[in-house]
Length: 97
Image (cartoon, rainbow, N blue to C red; front, top):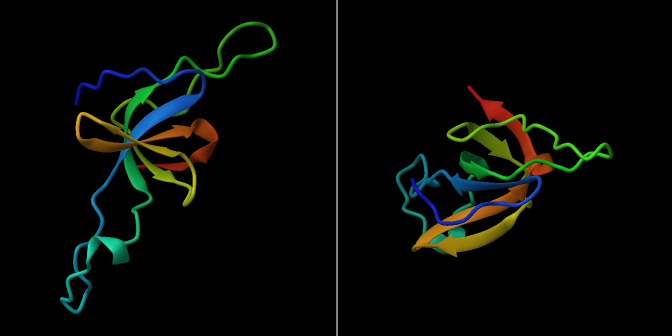
């Protein structure tokens, strides 16, 4: 996916995975009843957090990584009709292998 946005500093742009549309018993859930998935794919990363020595810290994640997000972190943005999430690196809990 090619997006026309570049995150700044320690920000990371991710796209959440699709949530379940029906329960295990086969009941379809409306959008309002679905939980937002905590799993996402990294789309772009910023330049890194500024360090005291003027250099930039390297990210622990890279583009196309699948990550596990904190439940309430980030800011939702809509770009080219796609719902994305702009988060800080500290809102990423793990890399999914």
